[in-house]
Image 1: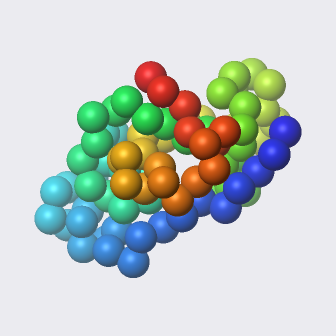
Image 2: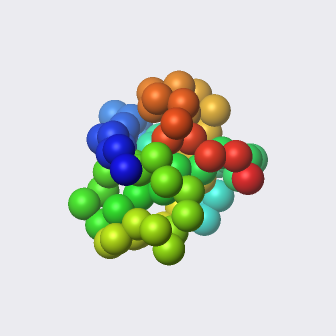
Image 3: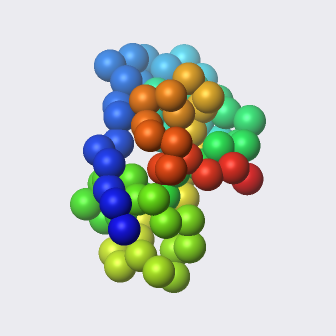
Amino acid sequence: MKTYPIYESPKKEANEEKYGLTSKSCVCCGKPTAEKLWIHATTDWVAVDEPDQDKVPNTQGAFPIGSECAKKFPKEFIFKA
């Protein structure tokens, strides 16, 4: 299983204030998403290339990510809903 650092936009806090923080917010930038793309994170706050949460020790779960932020990750770390 590979890991990859989770990108965080410098505008995340401002976007969360502007749009509000919801379960549909992009985990990287705080903008609303269509909930079509996801990353799977661990408690160490890194993305993993394994979609099955039962196979990942210390899973934090799946988080929505916007299409622009998805470009900041290698393709194997992005999952489609």
